[in-house]
Image (cartoon, rainbow, N blue to C red; front, side, top):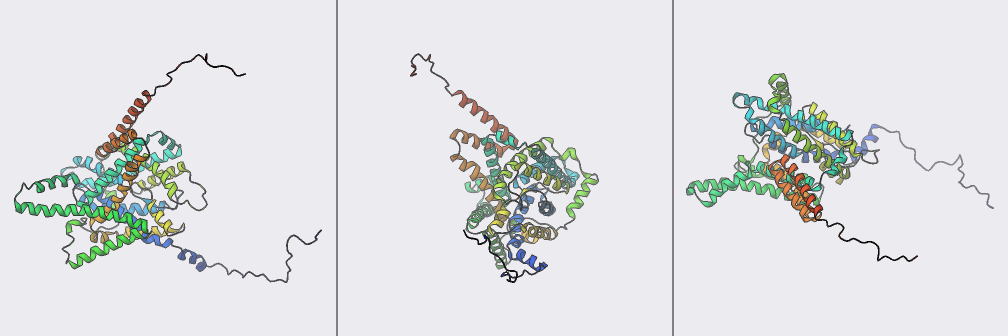
Length: 490
């Protein structure tokens, strides 16, 4: 039997082969942070957030009475992104920031269209302060609803929503976003443009008028075509490389500047750019909020109870579903093993309560920026660099970029989002569900485009009718027996 020890004996005189570690210093702590790719968020984040912020402000200001106030609304949107990036550092389970949803911009635009009739004549000057207060109030109410859903674990009720209704709502939302983004690219509604195009094709006017109108209409259709082409390029470069999207945007900006310089400012035409009358200071949105709270706010005229309930219901269902998708795409904070979906919905509600209290707009968790940062193998500190970029954008405002970039480039980035929704929830759904259910889904999406609230009710009604018809067609038991033909084998 061997008497050798199980572990080797180490002599005290033997020197260790490991080199002594130098004491930690601020340089040793800063070096790993600089060598990682987290700092790229200062460039990749604005490449996603600035186009969406611009489109958001433009969709809210679709009405002629609000278009001159586009710079102020854009500045408030930049404040929303800055405040959201700060809140996201402390609230939530994901390493992410906040992002604006174009669907909320479309709904806010519909709200401004509703209340426009109540602010006529001299009272039209009160429209902007009232809208800038109404939207944060609706954000707070939405936050309370999301907080209640997460606090009392009501998200399980989403399982009782038929797939045809959820898919139809999201597909219809994609069509709405596509419609509004194309209108943003051209400067007019697509249907109005089609009506203007028909007389030119028929040739009902004089040749001179037809030629002049034809050039104008061709320019509008060209902007729509360029927006669609740019959205297609975004999809192609996104699949090729992580830096494809920001590089394509930077290239498009440079190309626009070169063409404008080569043509002495005559091309692209001034009508291709978003109107930006006067630059604004970063504190102007807060002055308008103070003006509204000082006595100019008329809640009975600007807050529509029916619209408020519709807005809160739609966005609560939509964002609760999106939270489930975000849990699969966005990394968790260090130390967390799994995502508690109910707690994350509650955190999203708390985020919107804080945003609304700060005079900001509704926001949800961003998944595009985290996915892009994951592609460059970043660490958990990239939101801090994104915060610095948002702070600079808020103080300076991206007015220089907006003045140089044609609006079809901003619209193209939103067209890509709408096409993703339509493809996933309408086209690909054809392969996942039965043909009758898909017909119900498509009909629901069509009605949602016409009226969001009516579309959801219509989808539920069609789903119940389909269920009743299919249930009544079940034949059930059609044969009876008395076991007389059965013989025991015991």
